[in-house]
Image (cartoon, rainbow, N blue to C red; front, side, top):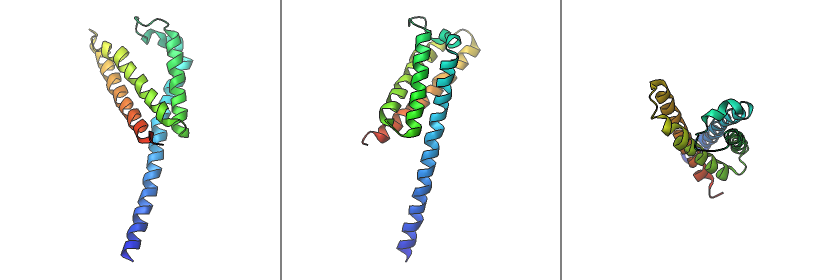
Length: 139
């Protein structure tokens, strides 16, 4: 009787954890959908953020915006999630290395703080993307 109660209790807990995992997955994907759409709708304004040593400015804004939208759709639908999150993590690390890290060298304190904020945000999101990819790799 006690064993059956424990099994029922933990089975019920697992169902709640599965719901929590699904909610977290959707919460993780939504900002990328929004960021991606912002890239696509405001590409010309965002082109100035592309480092000057990378040719093609606005092309890269459109490409990364599309990549973020597709990654969000993949994460929400759980289709090709392992490769989508791996590529998303790589994209975010490219942002860290080419946009945020150089921004830390700015003379303007506000720009330096914004660069650090962006660096930490994208670094953490890249880590989460790699974690999700690793969790789905054997599927």
